[in-house]
Every structure is written in structure tokens, then in C-alpha cells.
Image (cartoon, rainbow, N blue to C red):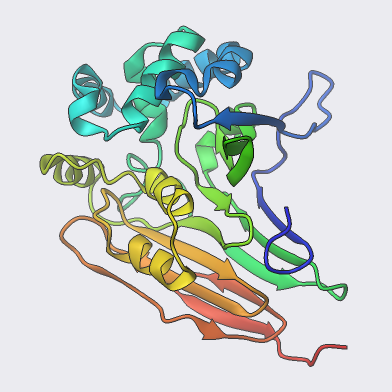
Length: 299
């Protein structure tokens, strides 16, 4: 999708994407989510198409996470409107109804990041990159080192164009059942990726983040930011200072040279943005630093 430069591609690597029975990787399916529809109806088509895969995903996920996690998630699902803000609570209900999956299981899928981003977590930290190739095409990409969950997630991966009035207002790569985004872009705006940071205990992150009645879900904050009428600088501030359940490192890209990142340490632990910095022709964003790869002049 074109943005401020001629060609921009946002992608992420999850081993391979969906795998056919022959073992051959196939591209993720692409869907349109109509934001003009009632929230409960928006994900109907994608949830129906992926119903069997989603059921398999949540069934296996339940075998991986602890019973304590499932118990907490069931409490959240029992009063989802109280703990998850509009319109996302209704969207989760819609996914549950369309796919024939218990609402608690849908909430569990949406809190996957929050219940894995903690100290001693077996999941790995992601890395995002921004690179410009010789023809001027910009790539903002990331891997997704989810360890145990990789095989489960590749078969529920989809690309979604979120539209209003027939126009795409933002696009993202997500996992079916999850109404938030880990990777997204705004046409003629900016791109956002999320890298995992592990800190605290899952139960402390989840309970503290939900205690004040605001959900603080990292993937929902990306949707909020892409949906809003924010400048690049305002988007960085929103990502840095909004309350969140779990620690996270967000990366944003705008225009040819401007990038920014912000580390959010999670509930009660502060956070803060890195001021956008003009960079060379290509760079990697990993860990908590921006590291230029190439400062050679344009040809």
C-alpha cells in the first residue's frame, strides 16, 4: 500500500505462514472489515472461514497456558463489557458467535501477548527492521519469535483491511480471533510494529492492568492509534503514555527517514518515547536502540 513514498511494504515473519496439507507454505488470506457495520458483525466472515482453525488454536492454547490463566480470563469474559472497552468487547462477542467458540476462549486469544510477556517467559523477543532498497521501496518488517505458539499461529494468520465509507483507513496483519493488531499501517501515514518485552509476572500484569477498569491491551492500542487522526509525533506519544497491561516496545516509521520507538514498561513502571531521529538509508530497530546499518548516500 502506498504511503508517503512510492512503495511501502509492512510484513512479519512467523516461520512460514499458513501451510497446506502438502507442507507447502501459502499466503495468508486477506479480508475487509467494514467499520460501518455494528461492532458485533464486523469479523463475521473471517471468523466463519477460520472457525475450525480457531477452535483448534484455542483448544491447544488451553493445553499450554496454566489453569490459573484460564480462570482469570473466564472472569474477564463473564463481564467483558466492564473490562474491555467498546467497540472491542462487542467485536470479540461477534467472533465468538460466528466461529462457535466460547467467549472466554476468544478473550484468551486476545490476551495472548499479555499472558506471555512476563519475566521468565518461554516466548522470545521480536525484532523490527526498517530498510530502503535501491529503487526507493521501503520495508518495515518484523519477525515474531513466539516459540511454542508458532505452529498454532501460522494457521490463523490473516491480513485485514479496515474500511469506512468504502475506503481503507488502516491495514494490519493479525491472528483470527484477535481483534487487535501487532503489525499495521495507515495509508499516507505511518507504520507500527510491536516487539515483545518480558517483565513482571503474568498475573500481576493482568490484574494491575485491569484493576482500574481500562483494558490496556497492547494490540488494541495499535488499532486505536491507526484509527485516530494523529500526526506521527502524536502517535508516538499515544503509544508511549497510554496505560498498558504488559511491557512492550513499539516501533513506528514515517516518510523516508523518520523513525521512532517507545518502550512501555507496563503497569506502574513508567514508559517513554524516543524522540524521532533522522537516519541513513537503512537501519534495524531491535532491542531498545536504533542502530543504523548504512549511511551511504542515495545513488
